[in-house]
Length: 329
Ligand SMILES: Nc1ncnc2c1ncn2[C@@H]1O[C@H](COP(=O)(O)OP(=O)(O)OP(=O)(O)O)[C@@H](O)[C@H]1O
Ligand SMILES: [Mg+2]
Image (cartoon, rainbow, N blue to C red; front, top):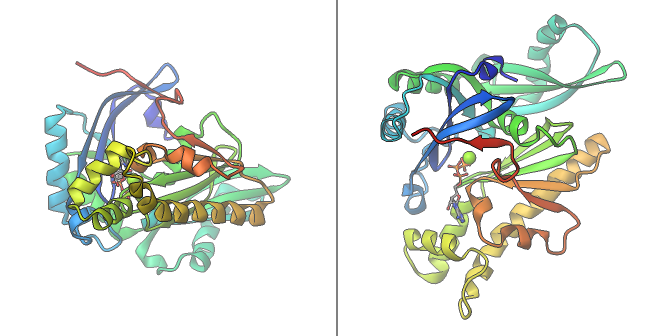
């Protein structure tokens, strides 16, 4: 756990997604995270223009624009907390779990750059490395190696500066998600975060991250398919998707058919990841936590659960009692 988070101070969580920016004001009290304020700014431009994502691997929108959006959210939601924890999306980072003999922390740190060279597809001079021991077992260590492009870190530093925010930590989204969502569930699990442009897959076991992956099929594809299939504008398609999901009114069942190919592909990727984890560790995943904005699609969990031995759980932090919401006046 990032230690300062537990010192009762208020802090901001900032998530710059591909299609939205989310700001949460939190504090840690009574052994739990309390959310006091939350705000989302969604960019619908990406539905009309594929290149109009807030964040992609090639950074389409300038730091100035992103900072402007964040400042607007902070002003509107009257948040004046300066300490911020920023999340790095799984699609822009690299992770791998290494099996190590039991050695000292110093030796691990020294070995990481050599290990990283073999696993990370970009030059070491262009990444920031970090690692986390995820398990100790019979004289061996399982170590999660994380590599984040320096460009991305520099971009975040610039954005924070422009918004007068003080970065307390920059953390991989997968790790933040596992910490909070899996805090009470040590079972081998898959977190399936279906966002706007990206679906992120994170295997956790004993509550820590074991594998990560991303695919670029997500909620935006559902909207685009509805838009072309029903010959309506992307904005209208977005409304229809949110209003009916997979349970449209009688006579409009074609809506469901348009979306299921995308959902079947996402489910297939989830099953592939589960099989890969089994091959690697011999451990079976029986449950999937579905999160991200698209987890709200009406009927989604039912659809995924049909003809499946897997248990699908909505990864809703409030419903699961993992975060309290105590709005400030
Ligand atoms: N009620 C709803 N029903 C169906 N889909 C929804 C609903 N609410 C939001 N979505 C979809 O969720 C998606 C956005 O999810 P999210 O906010 O997790 O994305 P993001 O974090 O900005 O993007 P990414 O994770 O790709 O970087 C959009 O495609 C949106 O249409
Ligand atoms: Mg996201």
